[in-house]
Image 1 (cartoon, protein in one colour):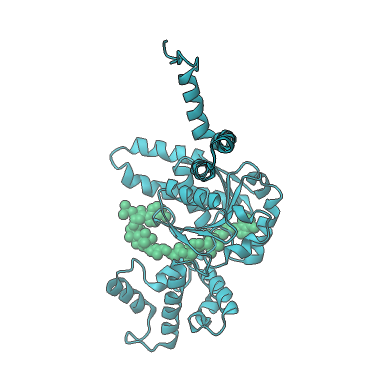
Image 2 (cartoon, rainbow, N blue to C red):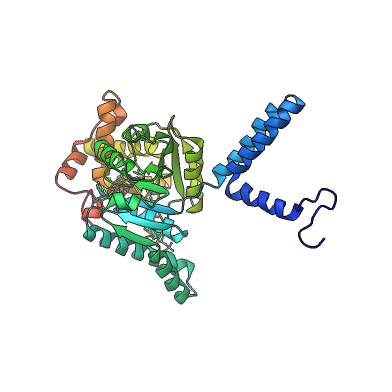
Amino acid sequence: MGRSGMNATAGVPIFEVGLLFLFFYFYAPEIICLSLTGVLQVANRQMGSMAFFTHHFCRGLSSSAVRSAVIKHVTIIGGGQMGAGIAQVAAATGHSVTLVDTCEDILKKAVKGIEGSLKRVVKKKYADKPEAGEEFIQKVLQNVSTSTDAGSAAQGSDLVLEAIVENLKIKQDLFGHLDKLAPAHTIFASNTSSLPISDIASSTDRQDRFGGLHFFNPVPMMKLVEVIGTSATSQETFDALFNFSKELGKTPVSCKDTPGFIVNRLLVPYIMEAIRLHERGECFCHGSKEDIDIAMKLGAGYPMGPFELSDYVGLDTMKFIMDGWSAKDPDNLLFTPSELLNKLVAEGKYGKKTGEGFYKYK
Ligand SMILES: C[C@H](O)CC(=O)SCCNC(=O)CCNC(=O)[C@H](O)C(C)(C)COP(=O)(O)OP(=O)(O)OC[C@H]1O[C@@H](n2cnc3c(N)ncnc32)[C@H](O)[C@@H]1OP(=O)(O)O
Ligand SMILES: NC(=O)c1ccc[n+]([C@@H]2O[C@H](COP(=O)([O-])OP(=O)(O)OC[C@H]3O[C@@H](n4cnc5c(N)ncnc54)[C@H](O)[C@@H]3O)[C@@H](O)[C@H]2O)c1
């Protein structure tokens, strides 16, 4: 009988059929689902009510199709602190990444930043094997290419993730444009801190393939990703985004499409209250920002105080978030704007990225 395992009575090559079944089960389960649906429907007519079994068997198979929706080629739009960080972790976990920004100089700076961050990672991970560490860095950098043409980058991508300025109109324009150019299967996602994903997605005709992937700064160090599905996001898309976050070594949490999701809805009002406390100068520590930062680090165990963290996030981003929320909900005292924050942003003092914010950086 040999390896083929031919069934002597029926003359069926069981081994080959088995292999074929396994191949389709893992790589094209929809085909099995369709064929078996046909077979089961015939059986159904013959044997009475098999509908329940047919339905549930095929649901099982299509959920394995969802599991196999792979994100391999990723385009990240925006090579600032978040985009570069996301590009780094995606490339380090074997994804091919195209990082897009408006000009070559920004992209060069982003790649330099990725290299610097990888050196910090490697220093720890490959402490005893510096050569292997250098090899790792080169391998990761080979996975990253850059472009100033978002449209052509999107054409070869399974996922287009946006990390550009926190402005609804600009994000909508970007995705509206890319929607016409990206393949049908491409998933779109936004790393927005505060804007409704459904508002951004409304500029496209692929709202079922649109979700939120909210990373935290610094991306290589922060373990959380908030995964956001809107009422239009398909289960397949949500699962693909959730699995992608896991592949990146992160811990995903599922969030509703509500302002600030989980973390920022709690974190941003806390930071703003610290700024207002400082502005009013009425706390026990005389309202100095240094004292407030020390108090929150030593008293509440935060790794950074609220002023250090604002400078780290970017005061421009903090202002974009607050302006958006206070415009939508002007009576909410948690969203009261801060004159000091607005003044610093007007002066171009965006925090660490521009060399000055609440504090000065060399
Ligand atoms: C607003 C948005 O929508 C949402 C947000 O992102 S909100 C912001 C969320 N982020 C935070 O709250 C960050 C709070 N801060 C922290 O967790 C820590 O201060 C920090 C991880 C940034 C830095 O840690 P800290 O101990 O203060 O400084 P430092 O000693 O320089 O760094 C600690 C380690 O992290 C590593 N590290 C820090 N930044 C890194 C980076 N960008 N890349 C790689 N490694 C990095 C360092 O190499 C160091 O490694 P070691 O322990 O092996 O020496
Ligand atoms: N900074 C944070 O801590 C943080 C954390 C999570 C999410 N976010 C969100 O991520 C996004 C980016 O934040 P960031 O801190 O990286 O900002 P950033 O200012 O560091 O970088 C934004 C980058 O986008 C580029 N850009 C702007 N418009 C573009 C366009 N149309 N096409 C291509 N590139 C464009 C800019 O040139 C810049 O390099 C924002 O939506 C922000 O709310 C920020």
